[in-house]
Length: 399
Image (cartoon, rainbow, N blue to C red):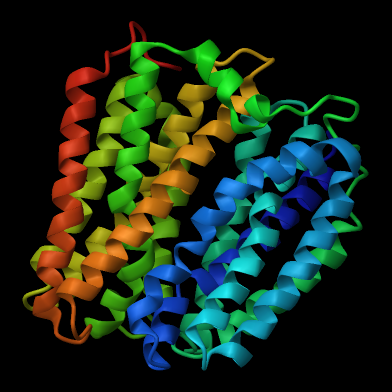
């Protein structure tokens, strides 16, 4: 495959994640500024809802009837219009959240579509795709740097406008991407296949069940980070909180490059355990820092994101891929997304919102954050110990 195609696909990934990164980290601080602190968790509930719906849209419509690049263009155009309209409805929590929901309902299917398009046009997926996908992380970092470090707009509607403009730009760019016919044209859709239930029945085993249940449960405390860490960072006195959060994605790039080395040393089980342990440590660092606003501990917790994300989510995707056969590989990955980004994060967003509203009356009172961060840390610790005790170590590490 020519370097030119790889560059075009890399730019696609850059724009894809620039859109999400532009608003996702800052929206909590914006909502705090306009008096919607009590419903921040709903802004982080809409994405899991969309993640649950997305596989059904992809399986029933996008994968069977329309060229991928055209579906990408339409969805990004409509999603861009929705998020551009959101600030005008900020006076109403209901309408604001509904417009965010509308945006992510259009946006979430594009994550799978972008991956599908990239895989269709590359030959050596294992070597080439990570090099293309890393541009998505760079896009997220660039968005955070722009809205936070350069514009200082964390608590303003500007990130939403930037996300909307980038989405419209992505819609136009999608029409220039290589033609990609629907991958499942002519196939008869079934609920079991789209929901991943066929894949689940074929993969059914005690280790796989332990992995799936652990993945779902660990995502419940994980949601607290995405929803409330930017608010906590801002309350702790950091300038440009979204820029500070982007150091987590920077570490993600470094650990992504180093993952093959860790795989050969640790194998799947201890990679997953290490990822879970990093989440536990992160929350306890945040809890320890809450008494005095210790910036070093908070920044260390942010920098753990590379281990938290890569060792857990990416390793989980590799585990599922290795256990799957060609006929169920797509279904199995879709089922994992449904369980983690969908059901797990949905439950987590609601639970973390209830805990936050019960324990943190005023976000600027740092001491009130200590118990808030301790609870997801303790829950994650319990899940980690369960997984470490029950999941068998593979006979030979994945290399």
